[in-house]
Image (cartoon, rainbow, N blue to C red; front, side, top):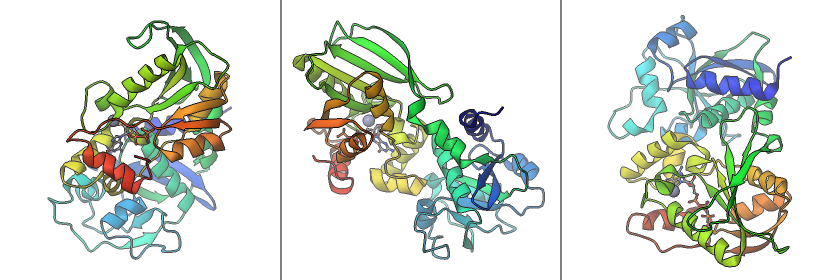
Amino acid sequence: MSDPARDAARAIDALRRGWPVALAGEGGAIEVLAIESGDANRLADFDAGGRADVLLSAGRAATLKLANQADAAVPDAPVRIERAPWLDFAAATALADPQFDLATPFKGPFHAAPVAVPDAAAAALRLARIAGILPAFFVRPYAGTDALPIAAIDAHEDAGRLAIAARARLPVVAAEDAEIVAFRTPEAAGEHVALLIGQPTGAPPLVRLHSECLTGDALGSLKCDCGPQLQAALAAMRADGWGILLYLRQEGRGIGLVNKLRAYALQDQGFDTVDANTRLGFAIDARDFGVAAQMLRLLGQTRIRLMTNNPEKVASLEAAGIAVAERVPHKLPPNPHNERYLATKRDRTGHQL
Ligand SMILES: Nc1nc2c(ncn2[C@@H]2O[C@H](COP(=O)(O)OP(=O)(O)OP(=O)(O)O)[C@@H](O)[C@H]2O)c(=O)[nH]1
Ligand SMILES: [Zn+2]
C-alpha cells in the first residue's frame, strides 16, 4: 500500500536529484523536470522531441515581463512558456535563475500561455519550495496513471502528523534548568524543537515562534534581527519565569537556505527582501504556523502570550486554535546593515515596528 505523505517525500527527493516527477490535478496530469537539478542530458532523456515547455511561477514570469499573455483571470497562476527551438537548457536556466537577470540579455521572443492543469502546475511549484530549489521546470503532459495526487502533498505538510520524538534536560546560557523537546513527522525533513524555560505557573507562557535563520542564529549576520531576537526572547522568558521558544525549521521564511542566499544576492543588487522573493518566484512569506500550533498543543499549552511584531503569526495561531492572550512586542535596535530590512518589514509586510 502506498502512503501518500511518503510518496510526496519521494517526489521531493526526486526533484532534488534531477529526476522527473508526475503530478495529477483536476482533469489531467503533467510531468516535470526541475531546471535547477537538471542538465542537458537529463532534458534529452525527459524530452527527446524537444517539445517540453517551461513552467514558471507568476512572480518570476511577471519579473521577466512574460505574464502578459497568460491567464489574467487567475493572477497567481503559474505560467507556461512555449518551447522554441532555441530554448535549450542554458536558455531555460536563464529563465529560472534571477541572479543573471541584470547581466544577461534575454533571448526571445517568448510566448507565455496558460498551463493545461493549473493545480498540478501549482503543486510542482510548491514541491520546489519544499525541496529548496528554484521553482522552474520543464513540463509536458503525462498519460500514466501513477502521478502523485495533490492530496499527497497536503498530507506531507499536515502539521497534525507531528509528534514528540525526544525530550531531555538542556542547560543553556540563558537558563540552566531548560528542557528541550524535539518534534517530527515520519516523512518531512525538518525536525522542529521547543525549548522550555522555567516551570509552568498556570498562567499563559511567554512564547516566541523563531524561524530558523542559519546566518543570523549561528553566524552573527547583521542583515537581519534574528540572532538578537532569539537571545532576547530567551532572556525575557527567564525573567518572566515560564516560557517556550519554538525553533521552527523554516529557514528563509520557508524557502530554504540556498534560496534565501539567492534572495540575499538579489538584495546585493538593490532589491528589497519582498521583491527578491518575488523575482525568485516565491511567496513573500511561505511559512505555515500551523506547525507551531500543533507543537503547543502537544505541549499542552493552548493559551499563550506571544512575542512578535508580526500580526500574521497571531492570526495564524488563532486560526489554528491557539488563544493569544497578549501580543508582546519584540523589537531590537537596528544596525546599519538591517535598517532597510526592518523598514521593509514595517512598510511592506505589516510588521508592527
Ligand atoms: N526569504 C528571506 N528570508 C529571510 C530574509 N531575512 C530573514 N529571513 C528569514 O526570515 C525569518 C525570520 O522572520 P522575520 O520576517 O524576520 O520576522 P518574523 O518572524 O516574521 O516576525 P517577528 O516575530 O516580529 O520577528 C527567518 O527564517 C529568516 O531566515 C530575507 O531577506 N529573505
Ligand atoms: Zn535572520
